[in-house]
Length: 159
Length: 192
Image (tube, rainbow over all chains, first blue to last red):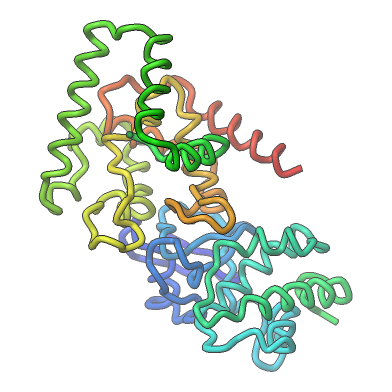
C-alpha cells in the first residue's frame, strides 16, 4: 500500500494491522514521533492525519490509504523551524524532550483549525498528552506563542 | 456491571460510589420494580452473561487474548476490515485484559461483557470509540483514547460491525453508516 507522509508517497509492504508509528520509525526513518506507552495514553506518538491529531501507536496503516499524514519532520527543519517549533524553542518548553514532538503535533492540529484558541481551549485540547518532566506550563505558553507567530506568518510559518 | 459510565452518567456513578451500599441496592430494587420481572428468555440471557463473566475471571491470559466465535468474523468484507482495525487499535488493551495489576489497561473491559455491543443501536458504542473515556478534571477513573481523527466514517462502520458479529449473538445493526453520520454530527454540534 501507499502512505502519504509529509507530502511524499511511500510504498509500504507491512501487515495492514501494523501501527503507523512502527512504519514511520522503522521503515521511513522518521524518528520524531516517539514510542511512549503503546496504548494511546501518553501522546508521545502523536502525528496528524488529514489535519487531526492521532496516536500513531494505535493507528493501523490499514486505515491510512489515501489520507495525508504529517509528522514533526513536516513542520520545519533545523535551519528553518516552523512557528510551533520556534515557539517551543523560545519558551524552552522541552526538558528531556521525549514528549515534545507529540506536543507540537497536537498543538499544530489545534492551531490549523482554531488560530486564536483561549487558554481553556488550549488546556482542553492538550489534555491527552503527558509530560513526565512537568513542563506543562511552559508547553502551554509555547502553544500561545505559536498562535501569535502563525498569525504573522500563516500555518506553514513562512514569515 | 458491564459498562464504563461515561458522559453525564459518569458523575452519577462517581457520587454513588460514596453512598452506603444498602442505599445503592435500594435504588436498584426500586428501578427493578419499575421494570418488572424479566421474561424467561431475558432471565436466561442474564444467567449466561453472569456465567460468561465468571468464566472470564478464571480464564488464562491466552484464552482471554482470543476473541470468541472465531469464523463469524469472516462473514463479510466490512467485518473482515473491521477485524484488522480491531487488531491494530483495540486489541492491545481489550484483547489482553489480564495485564499486571495497576498497569494502565489492566481494567480494560472484556468486550464480550459490553452492554453497548448488544443494544439495538450502535450509538453508545460509536460515542465511546469516537470520544474515548476520560475521568472528570482532577479525578481518577478509567481512560480510553478517542479515535475521532484516526478513523473515517466507513472505517468506524466496519469496526462496530466486526465487534457486533464477534462478541454478540445479535443480528447485524441494519444501517451503521447512518448511525455513524448521526453520532459524528452530534459531536460536531456539541463543539460549536
